[in-house]
Image (cartoon, rainbow, N blue to C red; front, side):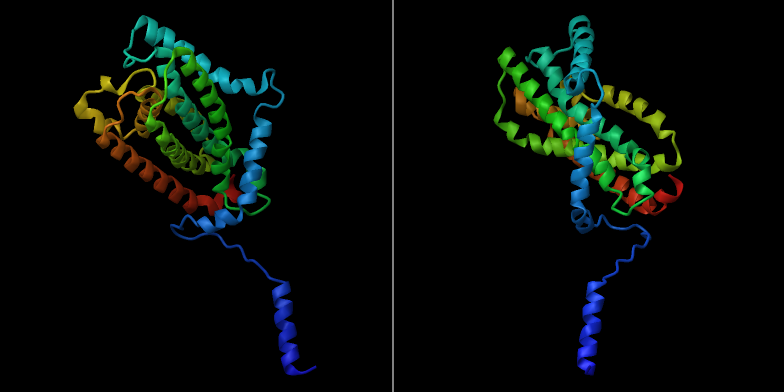
Length: 288
């Protein structure tokens, strides 16, 4: 065999036995979107698995998608609508509240599940390699199906009460993304902390309760003094809820200053959450 043929044979052998070496990340690693994309089949599997498992062996199954926000709606309408008589900007109060509960439920469920995603998949993490960031993303993504079902019920309520969406409804996907990115920012941060400190499981319900009352779910943003609305926008859900009401009910849009503050805070939360997650993910399999 000639030297050229030998060299060609070695090259073919190397190509047919390609080896991938997996090393832990060092420093403040980047998001590595290309890696997430190459493992997208796992993301699809995680979303589909969560959808199948979530309501398995429950008495009423997927009806929980509607019963949970409707139960909260009933409490808010009775307490704040009937007894306190909160203004609703000329919109029937049940529709006014339920329009806020749709994005709020997506946000709350996504953030809670993302924060528990690593612990819930500890066996998977310790056995095979894949980008760990897929776990909180997949968990949050599965709730988009519940979100669509909730929007269908909202459409029926709007038809019953005779309310119509505004042209600004075309911007609803942007407000939905704002809610999801905020949920993932906090959720990924909490999930990384939860691997070492299980206090997160006790902190999350308290955090969500406080966040709910700090968001304009039961009341309009007009109750917030105008000079404080930009500061109020540091809660991204204030802009999300105001945007949903603007698009679906024709109420005033979120002020520009408040929206800018929300986008800035959302971006900051996402950068901090993902950076800390990437920084600590190399130790997940060892300590989980």
